Image (cartoon, rainbow, N blue to C red; front, side, top):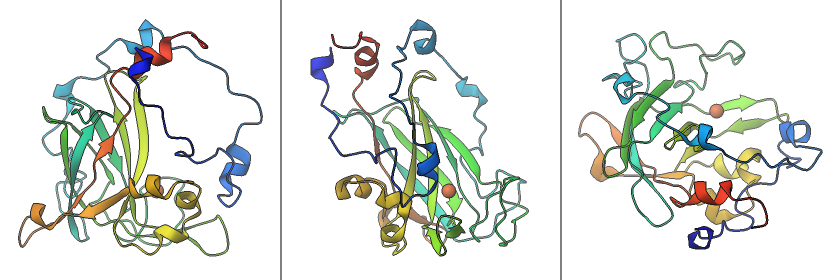
Length: 238
Ligand SMILES: [Fe+2]
């Protein structure tokens, strides 16, 4: 089945060591990675119950306390698809982000921007039978980080996608079209391909706005082919 896969473009992902992204200096592996074959235990599903998703889990504006979070109201929506453009249905998508001031609700967060008592910063949903997803949230703020003397993260939302098992997981970040901090961010700039960076930038989608309520951005996510699992379970070199 592996010959059905489109090869992953060379240079698409950042190198493990990108010195301008300071954390990568210590995090990047010093030794050759080990091959960990995926077995039936990792591929067996389901990994979660779809009935565990609550009606407001996708709505980060109100899902923390029931009261509205502070910030510009956003719709973030899109389609999860495989490399052939087929929808990936039933995929669990988790999202997390800073609040409108650029602060996370996390015990290790030290930025001086205040917490919003009504914003937790986490949401989740499941793609529908067309591969679509939709979150309601607030515009996250940019925030400084201790990479260099004046490093700022562009506004972004983190996403985790699960396929049909825990072994099928993608983690990525979404940025906002037109943000001048994108081209200044050492994490973004560690990605060697300009085309790959573009896939991380959500587009303003005025047609999907809720008038007098929320502005919309569209962010589609494309995974490798449906046969990827078979490919990875094949013995190396075969
Ligand atoms: Fe972040």
